[in-house]
Length: 344
Ligand code: AHM
Ligand code: MG
Image (cartoon, rainbow, N blue to C red; front, top):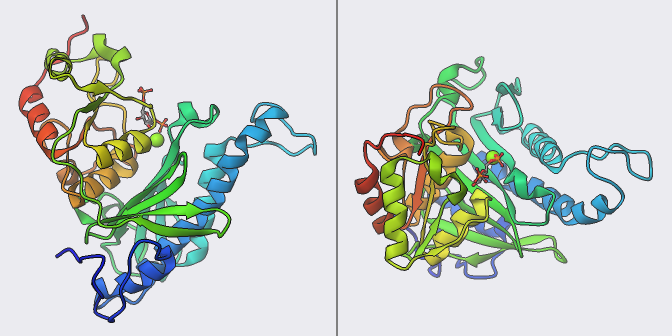
């Protein structure tokens, strides 16, 4: 059941645009009658790391004046790439919080077992997505999924704690470092977006109960890969053009997804001859956005099945992704089902 964001909740407190993220999280804790507050704290930890990463991304341009990342700066300190910095920041925040027992990160080959006896949650994260845009001042993002571990708290982490389908997520979200910085998340009771006010150091509710338009006129795909697409994808994209849709592709998944979520549109990263399973990762890219999409009334599929139903088999598994306005995703899926790849 979705809660009207303008109504008082069970505690009798109302929240509306301008509510701080902290207060909102606290008020929404009543969505989970038996929760003891760890998930709320975990969301706060992520928000704190996001603020730090936001600060680092804002500085990146200045840092670059003194030399490319990877070189030493004027103080003789080694400048780290932003994606590495973001990885460190998020892992530090998640380890210190105490709610998490294991982390899967795009930047780490294997699972990070935090050896934390009391941690109930597993987090899958892409700390800074949109690598080709990081150094050129174009929107980038963080994507995160939160799962409750399956095995008993305190016991050693098992594969079944990590390899959960997206439908098991208890929360998911993203941070968009764009013209303004936003944190958008869901705990399965609708989707809410918060805008960061740097001078106050706070995220404020700016987009309550986001509802994706059922239809749209934007398609987002890397058209440079056209020769690598299946015939069905080619025909679908041709049909987008024939219907007069606009092409918009930033090359940062969070930014492309966020725009289409608010304005209506479809994002596709299909299987290609070069990447027969697509490029994007199931555990820390596709699943989180798929849950947010569905919670906002949009849809996400790999072309054959719902993203949230895919049983993961490996940590860094890739998946084709077609995500966005429900009517558009349905139309695309019908057209491209069982497509075959052949380089032209
Ligand atoms: P990354 O994890 O290396 O940043 O790759 C993921 C990114 C997505 O943000 C984006 O949608 C896609 O890769 C763009 O890929 P391409 O350059 O092939 O269009
Ligand atoms: Mg990524």
